Length: 185
Ligand SMILES: C[S@@+](CC[C@H](N)C(=O)[O-])C[C@H]1O[C@@H](n2cnc3c(N)ncnc32)[C@H](O)[C@@H]1O
Image (cartoon, rainbow, N blue to C red; front, side, top):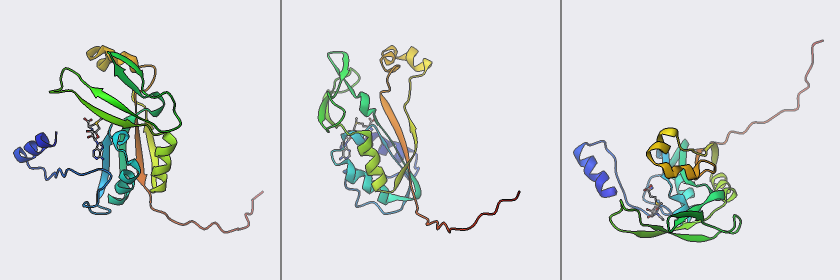
């Protein structure tokens, strides 16, 4: 994917760099530099997601946004023998599970590992790093998408993914003085 992106950049120069890094070690990127960091369906596959999130917080400018999507932690599913089944037996108590990727469109099948984290764990790690959740969306397939790809019906009743937007907050101190309030009769 990066190879293709670099070819596109060579064709039409937009000034985009594609460093290949461990997401849990962003040390070579400058602090307070980016307006937006996005992570599409990947945070759940990053074993050290806490270091990844603290790295994101460091490289974001104050007021910058971190937007990521993950499989909906309450309803994580995997496809085994063509059937969608629950990926984890329990919600609390982190576990990891393998995912087999063997769709026809792939050049060759491969396996990845997903790490189940609860929404509480994601939210606590964001909060610890001064990333305040500003929006949360559970996408549903549109009619147009359903017509194009009917198996999407399976995720009409329960969300397959969740998109979370968080803002790097800047603290301002507000001192409330105990003042007498007079009411006009
Ligand atoms: C489910 S795939 C999604 C990939 C891509 N975002 C997409 O939509 O096609 C998750 C990706 O996370 C990557 N990944 C896992 N751990 C990582 C890490 N520590 N640093 C960078 N990438 C990682 C895996 O290599 C895998 O490509």
